[in-house]
Image (cartoon, rainbow over all chains, first blue to last red; front, side, top):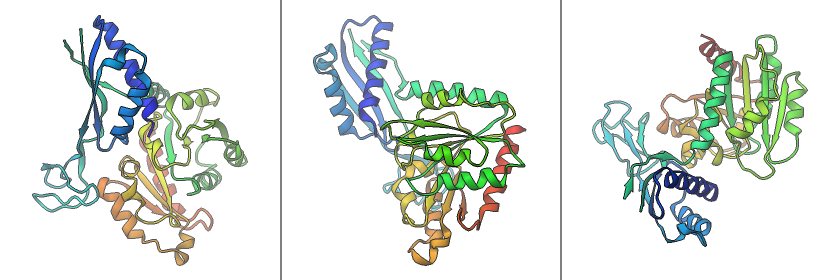
Length: 115
Length: 218
C-alpha cells in the first residue's frame, strides 16, 4: 500500500490536533491498523521514522495497534474472530460465507498524547 | 495529556468523495468504479456496453491509466464522452483526480458514469471515488483463487465479472471455485461470467446495469 502517503496524512492530522489543543510537544501517537486496511505495520513505522526525522515529532513514540478481523455470522449473527481469513466457518452454526465485517477495516489515528 | 481523537487517515480522500457523491445524487447519475488487474477486460467491457446500450442510456467514462490515452480513445470511438486521467506513476485513482475529470464532462442528462480505475487488484480498493457501486473484473486466465488472494477488492464490490469465458477450454479455471471464494467475504456479490469478445453472458450484465440504474433514479 502507500504507507508513505498514509503517514503524510497522519502527520497532517497530528499537526492539526496539536494546534487545536495547544500542545507544545507531542509525546505519543497511536494508530489503529485493521487487518483488512491493506497497510503493513512495519512499513508504517518505517515511513513515520523517515518522515519525522529531523522534526520535533522524531522524539514522539509511534504506536501501531493491529486490529484483527472480526465478523458477525451472516446466518446466526454471532460475532467471532476467524483464525483463517479465507475459511471462516461460524463457531456457532457452521455457516461458511456471507459474514459481515465488524472490525478490521480501520486505519485511523486513535490517540495523541502531548503537553 | 491524552487528546480524545479518532481520525480516519484517508479523510482527505473521503471528503472529496462525498462531494462527488453529492454531485451524482443531485443529478441522478449512477456512478460505477470499474477495477481489475491489468488486461482483465475493463475497457473491452465498456466498449461493448457503450455500443450495445447506446440507445437506452446516456453514458460517459473517466479513464485512469499511468500513461497514454489509449483507453479514452477506444471508449470515445463508441460515441461516448471520455476523459483520460494520467497518474504518471500513481497506482490508483483518488477522488481528487476524479473530481478534476468530472468537471470536464457535460453531466446534463447523463444516466451512467463509469470510472475505469488503474489496472491493479490492490490499491484501488482503499480509495472511494464517490461511486455508487464497485465492479471488479477477473479474467479466467488469471486463476480462480484471486478473490482469496485479494480479499478487500472483492469484499467491497457489488459485482464480479468473470471475463474471457471463451478461453475456458484452454485454462484451468473453476468458475464455481472463484464464485465461492468471492462469496466468502461478500455473500451478496453478483457474478457474471461472460466474454466481451463473443458476447456470451453480456445480457445478464446489461440486466444488472438496468436494475442498478433504475435503483438510482428512483
